[in-house]
Amino acid sequence: MLNNKSLLITGGIGSFGKAFVKTVLERYPGIKRLVIFSRDELKQLMLRNGLGLERQSLL
Image (cartoon, rainbow, N blue to C red):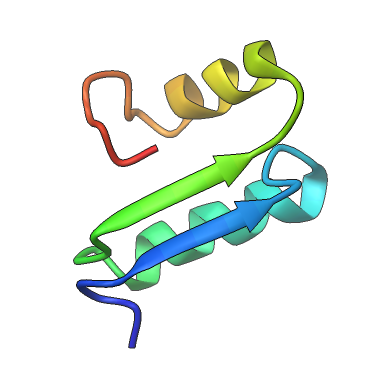
């Protein structure tokens, strides 16, 4: 359903957002682009690193 699609998630670094991002990445490995919007760049970086996406441009 989301494979080859782009998805924008607002509030993606909150508790629900993090769980939702993890679920999306697990269920849809072919997602084209995942954009997480928030005001806290440090927490976004921490989320990216925590998901093992340091070198990928998915987030």
